[in-house]
Image 1 (cartoon, one colour):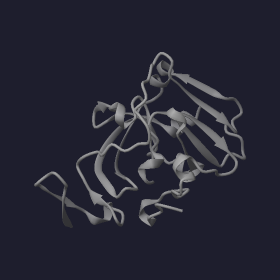
Image 2 (tube, one colour):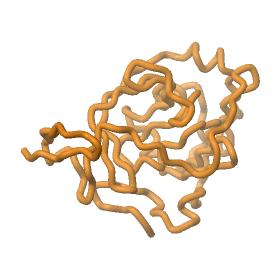
Image 3 (cartoon, helix red, strand yellow):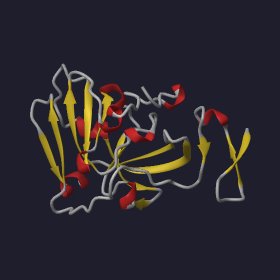
Length: 200
């Protein structure tokens, strides 16, 4: 065990080092980081689309999304900018539960995640289908704040947090991997924090 002092706080945190990937600093705060402005969302016009290598495209409205089974995930999150926030509770729809309603074509091996402002990020299908990956609309018992991705953000706890796209609007299933927004600017194609896969 070791102690890490959080910036802006006098209290020390007692941390199990096995929970913190190399090169990370633990904080109680949740820093706000994103490219561009926070979008204004009209829930009456919001939808979530599943396209690409699927037998039939799917479109969910906000009421339809809210009617899906709910799940809760307790996890740590790790940002490529070297902060980690431990003991988060996210609530929302498990991606595996959502995709149980979708027939993927056999050649689907990757997904491009689409979000507001044209933002994208890529994931292997195996990463997307892990049981703790969800489309979250609550964090620590409260609705997500707009700057943290309200109304829905993807949460992929085992990868660097840029893969957990804010303001997510859809999945496009692909046969081959291709870079998303940050990946085109040199970020790693997968982003495993335990391997320090920060940049290509």
